[in-house]
Length: 317
Ligand SMILES: [Zn+2]
Image (cartoon, rainbow, N blue to C red; front, side, top):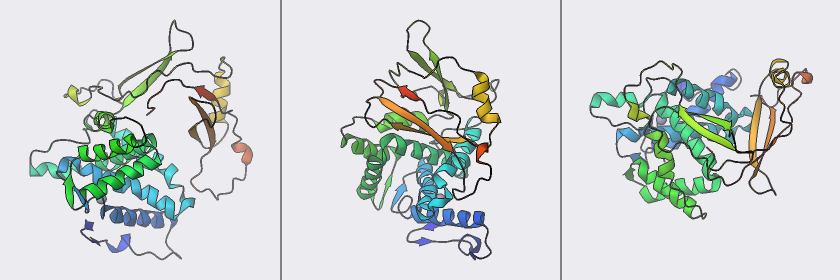
């Protein structure tokens, strides 16, 4: 529990014996300590003005649990672990008809306990991670720094954070309204399923569309305004996709998944010299990077990396 200048822990979250404590216990304890230290800035130095934006301080603290622990113990592979522990878990919750927007108006005291749920912590952390990736590390760090310096010892609403991030982007010559991007994610529940399909008549063109994803397609959403597709689709002009070999063998695709263990981590990065081009590469994901794989043939990277040609894109999220 964070307090002004004082972090308080129960014994189990601060004491460990490295000789006997399990790996998962050390990891859990490290994440709790990092979380509470983070609150000294996001939560204490700058405090949400009202309960509807509690997710900002909890989302940041949860996100930095992984970033901070990764810095302290790089071998723990925390940034990869984020995907399974946070992103995938909260997608299970947020894909239900009973989910709610992360920023929600509260009308009575009894509502307050509701905002301390996994949507605040995990979806908050996932949105912050997405924003960090879209903005780039430099602009993201500058934005947080400006936000903390501008509002130290004060209260803020989410728009103050978005303003700091937008200004950080402007200083890099990118005129992007972070508020416009993020309002789509914070003021409505759920997340979209994005469909990319070949354009029927135009060659080398794909059409991108989206709809609200729900596990139960028969579920009745009582408040349709909670998902009204305002700004979620941030790709534009995604054209001219070129792939090596257009005939797809389902056997070839599925053998990679069924005849070898594990799953890949896919990295998409801008091509160093070719403009508007990204390179997609993959490697076998393992939590323990030091682990010895006794049967290397169980993961032999059968897929070849492919390149996708992208022209005129603004934001890919
Ligand atoms: Zn917290």
